[in-house]
Image 1 (cartoon, helix red, strand yellow):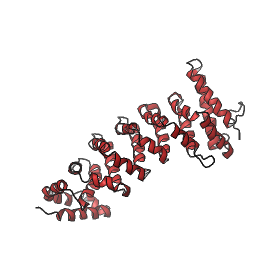
Image 2 (image 1 turned 180 degrees about the vertical axis):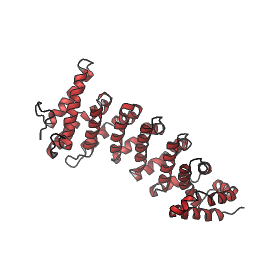
Image 3 (image 1 turned 45 degrees about the vertical axis):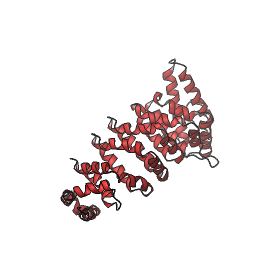
Length: 339
């Protein structure tokens, strides 16, 4: 189905829309002459492409035509417009950025003849994933790139490419950015990368354990409250995930990790204390404690009993699970031999 992107404009097919966009990006690269007009034309074309996928606009809504959507999906790949949308994101007008992200995210899930052409295109051009990740270094496109990345992460093949690249480790810096909105968005993407595809993530964590948890310890020691709390909460989820059993075993074998959790249990923030508790309990419940870990428990047995007995008493009445877990930990600590 062809689409009209202006009441006085000629009707254009999906293929013509894509060609128009490609040509306009090429003209934009030639220099500043008529740049404002070209950027406006690009915005209009991107809006028209979005309307093909989502069914018109508020003034002329219609049901999306599946044939037109398939044509658009094939053409953005064949004419390399997927790449152009990503690499030119910073040049677009504000609304066009959002529309481009909506187009990209929609096309990622579109099948043609049982395949995912846009996903396969990105697999052949993995530098596009790096460009999206590096989008976090540019405030004007960071949030848009974040939404696009998280839709990429839905696909295991694309997640594997990101996890296998050195630039993945940039996320440990992104989640501590001064801009709260950007840091929070980066953490959402970071979390998805480590949790969406559990077997893949477990392999990655195990194979890169030392590097990852050296960086992760920095997050747990962050002076940024949000970073510290989010990182603790995610750590608890990762350690308790069944597929991460080997990672969990290695983490709780470290007496340094135990000492860090015991320090965080005494943090001035009750929320930090609570998240640390959920990691600390894994150390206590471990039936195969290493000699160094057991030595710490022995030396601190009496203090731990006193501490746990009084730990966040107010939660006991409202949170039965917390109360039961705390009672279990007390029994485990009490059972530790002193000699």
